[in-house]
Image (cartoon, rainbow over all chains, first blue to last red; front, top):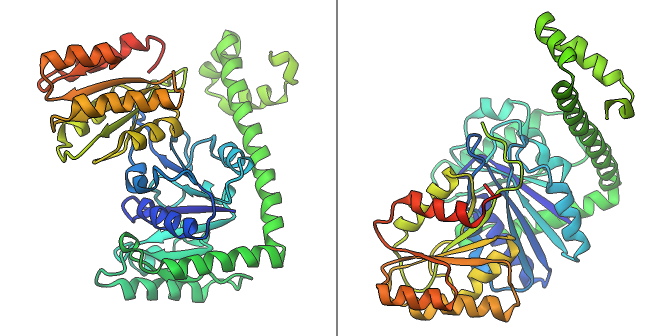
Length: 267
Length: 137
């Protein structure tokens, strides 16, 4: 079972992960966590600080926490996230929690990794117009309004509900859960909804469809990544090709040429 | 923009024991970030067991301990002992804090590879890491 948690910076994702670990451990489930943070685009360095919120579980042998820098990869997770999830699953962890970097609106890679995607909002996450925008608000299987002890929490819940009420009918209506993660409030309900979504995935066949789509995406992503590497290599080793592109300002033509070459001739 | 050829060196920074002074360690974290290292900061009041667990789970090459409480002769060796107990041989330890010269010598004898006292230029820590990991970030 892979649960993804995503949301803007500072919404409380790490604290929510910490609270979830505590609940899952009460059920004797072994829990692994992947927590992503950004690297500097200039130096490649990073301060990975998600673990600090989860350190009370550091001495628990049933919990494994791995911080990951995204190392220049866009989309909210490192390129290695999917492989890491697979490895942790093979290690026998019952639940893998995947926490993205603090995201904006369109870093949606978590959907390609998680069975259940939780979008974490706070009462000040924005007004009804933000809620209408495409992207992250569409991919939630469960919404969490964290820091629900703040004023205007109820309005945030209403805004999400209003947004959900006008969309096309889907076979799963994302529930909205209010939490105060730092005090563990609302976590019983969140666990219930996570279990509910898991049952839905199994019973409706949606889980299997998602798994197939994920594998397809992953294969396509790998082809994309390898093509990018191959193109850079070709342009690096063929001054004629590079010169032609620079002279004609024709990246499309050169790209088509590289793409059409058989792999072995590209070296 | 630099793209590191190899994966960045990973460093777990921790405050061990009952000591709430974390300004120094946070500044070090930032400096190491700017030098291209991946820093995992684990926060205050860590036990030696927690620090070693974090370093193992995070696949870190380096543990950096910060301590201003005077308990360095107990807690730094405790981290080394815990590493030995778990047969971890590929993680090195350095430390920082208010530590007298005599103790620095004793700690280095025990296997703490470097100690940086207050007022040390940040570049000195970076230079030491660069020398220790010539091929890394």
